[in-house]
Amino acid sequence: MDAKQTFAITVLLVATIGLSVAGIPDLVGNWTGSLKGYDENAGYMDINKTGNLNMVISEQKGQVFAGNFSINFSSSQTGLMQETEGFSGAIGSDNKTLYFAEYDHGYDMGTILSNDTIEAVYIEDGAVGKAGAYVAIYHRMK
Image (cartoon, rainbow, N blue to C red; front, top):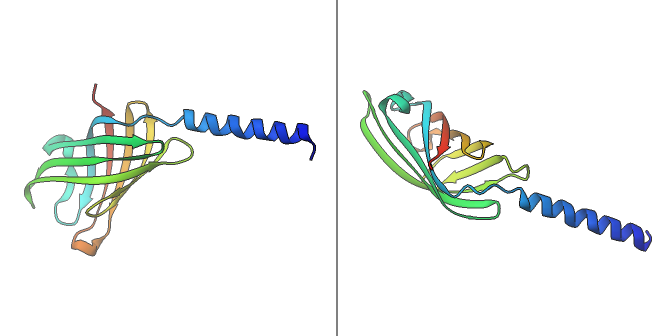
């Protein structure tokens, strides 16, 4: 490979890396959401009707971020439930796919639908005595 080809490849790589870094969305902020799902203990849930769901992304460095979820809802099976749980997450290389690992239990996989809208799918297995699957849509609070 001659010097011109090496230079051209180097420029292309630097430009591509620069575009990828420049395209990483800033997720820091407060998000409010709606959630529908099924939990072994609570049954079918529609948080829009029985409570509220919030997500705070408190810090982000490049593609990695951290924060917490808080959920308040009532169910005929469980009564009033309030829970706050921290998480760490990462933005995929496409700058649209999200991965969350919740600190107590469960995982979320999500998609950035727009600058102000995220869809997240939560999955929890039965190791802690309950199992569930939920779909949440979060909107950035302004």
